[in-house]
Length: 314
Image (cartoon, rainbow, N blue to C red; front, side, top):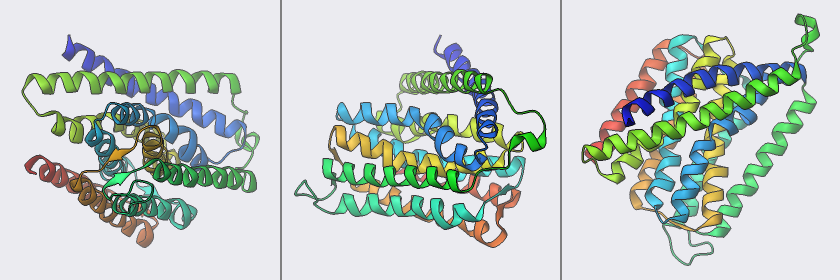
C-alpha cells in the first residue's frame, strides 16, 4: 500500500502542478501582474507549504535536525536540481531585476542564518536560534513581500487584452486552488510514504530527514517549475525557485524558530556555507549570459548528486 500511495502522490504532484501553473498564469494576466511576481509570491508560497508544515512540526516536537536540514536541503535542491532540470528543458532567462534584488537577498538570507546561528542574540549561547532570531527573519520576509507588491504596482504587465481575450478570473482561482491542494497533498503523501519505505529498509531517521524529507518537500517546486518551463513560463520557473528559497529561510525557518527555539547542529553551518557556494555557482551564468543554458543545467545536477553523496558518506 505504501508503494501504491507513493505513486498516487507523484501523480497528484505532477497534475496538480500543471493545473496550478495554468491558474496562476490566468490570475497574473487578468490583473496585469508580471509573471515573475506571481512566481516570487503565490507560486513560491504555495510550493513552500510542505516545507513550512514539516519544519514547524519538527521544531515543536524537538526534531531540530529535520527542521533546519529540511530548509537548507530544500534550498540546495531548488537551486541545483530544479533549475538544472528546467534548463535541460528550455534555457531559463534570468531577469535583471532578479539579479539586482531577489537573488542577492536569497544569498544574504543564507549568510544571515549562519550569523544568527553563531551569535548569542536572545539565547546566551551560540549554535542556537532564539525567538528574537526568528522575529528578525520574519521582519525581513515582510520587507521582501512589501517591496515585491510595490514593484508589481509600479511596473504592471502589459494588459492581456492586447494579446487576445482576457482570461476568466473565477476559472483561474479554481484552477490555482485545486492545483495547489493537489500539490500540497501529493507532496505530503510522497514524503510520508517514502519515509516509511526507507525506514523499512533500516535507513536512519537523520539521513531520511536530510535526503527524503528535503527532496520530498521540494518536489512541488520541481514539478511546478518544470511544468512552467514546458509552457514557456520561464519567469514563473525561475521566480518560483528564488522565491521558494527566500520563503524557506525567512518565513519557514523564521516561523519555526518563533514558535519554538531551535538548537543548531554544527554540521548545519557547513551545509549553509555549501548553500552560499551553490548560490554563487548558479549566479555565474545568470550574470555572464543572462540565462541558464543546458550545459549549466547538467553541471548543477551533477553538483547536487555530489552533495548527496557527501551527506550520505558523512
